[in-house]
Length: 191
Image 1 (cartoon, rainbow, N blue to C red):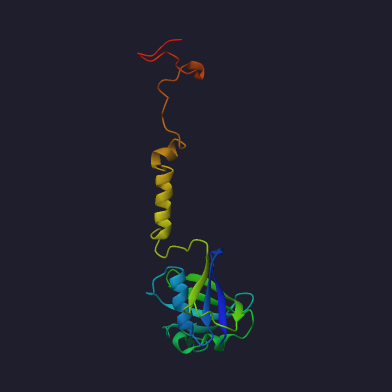
Image 2: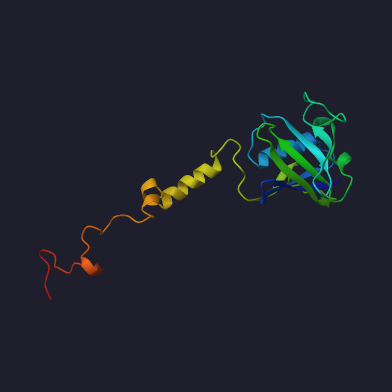
């Protein structure tokens, strides 16, 4: 049984990608679900794949469902289309569009074909993750919590940003010329 490994790049940042492994008999609906899961997106919006060439031009559409729009050619449906049936080239490419309002675009590229499946994996699955995934609905989720941790660790608040990150310590007791105050403390020994 052939196992395809696809690299799914986020179109806005090609250093952010996910590698997914999927059986050739599984469908584009399975690929759709594993892409959403690997990028931590929900499954509430419309989606479609387009067969593509090396210049990332849209070809035949493989859609989640038939939408109310004019088609040049009737789309294939994800649930009915096996991945293996649409692989025409050893470097086959697809364009995946999710949420037609936000227009999340991903470039899907076949990077490897294995003849044997790994019994430790449950296909389809994400086998590699690079870069921080975009936040589907703004700055919620992982990115927001990581930013909050950085803000706490380095005390990045509005005042710190205005003062350049330096506090006001020692500013009142400075003497001219920047010399330190060398008067002895009460109860201390003088030299």
